[in-house]
Image (cartoon, rainbow over all chains, first blue to last red; front, side, top):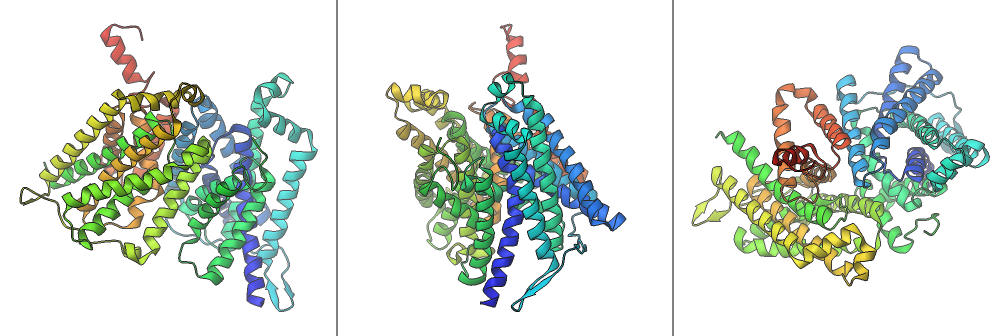
Length: 288
Length: 293
């Protein structure tokens, strides 16, 4: 029982981290209808920049802030110079552009920092608990608090502010939103910057959680998160979060108990195909 | 020719066959597929198993291999009848990951060790290797191109083009989306199977990682780079992407980065491909002919 609970807690933490990566992807898909594979590259860069600033200053706050600003800029550049000019082409063109972007940035990270696995020896300023014999480490607490905070903040921005209203209007119909006086291009850029900043936090959290930062750390999340946004309902942010947490728990429990010989990376896709057969619009997606 | 350049040439010819197959699905029928390496792998594993465990020769195994990959292609083409573009793209990625993990974790397929000791192809009593293998692959590539050309000229090909341009309009004219999309899937995956069989007997050792998602991206890049929906585009794409890493080899560490950057620039500035509509090559060609560009 105790092992089961510990597994659950770890699973939810992994799911929460997936959720933070998937969120950016769901936002971008909702607004541009582009499968933003290069999002995983932004997340890798976030981990590297965070680690570099942390090694220089030993301040985790500075490191998070720096990584967020840098990644927001990177997301902006990707949107402005790769996706926006390709919007008028069929969807596979921006998709290939995105995959090329992912490869190029991964390689750049490898060239800049070397192919080794670096450790991220940060201690997060969060308390650890012991409840009924189960230890909740400070890293785990941090993952819970930070991801809950980020998700709440994003929920607030997208549903309760004028910016969120403009974002939703642009994703529903860009032409009409523009004719209503919304600067839709600026909204798109802002969406990318917000999503990328969140990916930077996810990168740093993953780096600390596994104590590993390496160039290809984005390779598996890049495609797994695609499956997650399908399971959640393409473009649905709450659906993406729900799907991520379910996957995190599912992966951990299946590997811990069932001993299913398939690797965890295929699980997301098997779940995705099952969901597509059962509810083609996704868990929380609307019809249409 | 040195042994080294013969190897590169053979691999390029094999990849061109696989890229032609993908071109039938993506370029002619307009169905995005990001899991083509799965069929490349299914072909390779089928041929490897039939010739090692099954004891068949390459030539008697080949029809079975083509049948198996075509049949699996038919099943995996079924989602294309229900799913929209993006869903289909992600589903095919998923199929690729699942097929690779089945190869990797099911002992019947050799598990993580792969399959080794695959026999050489015997033709006219001679073991095919080196230059003769290159010629054999080039011959198969020529047959593949001929089939592609015949397909574009056939009624099925026309029906596929019509479905690609406007599915609703085409089906209202009596063109069955089910029949022709699945025809394209069967044809395209069988070509991938042929490429896979050649690959298995050329390398004589295969493992699941050869057929992972990066391979699918590579094949799709070949098709897009060369010019989707054109006859020679996939061959040109396979040539360019096959030779580039060798040209960049002196750059050692920077090789993969330049490769990715070039692909990015290419898709950014010539999204129609080297031979596609409005491409630089086409414009120059029509200017040379004196026509209006």
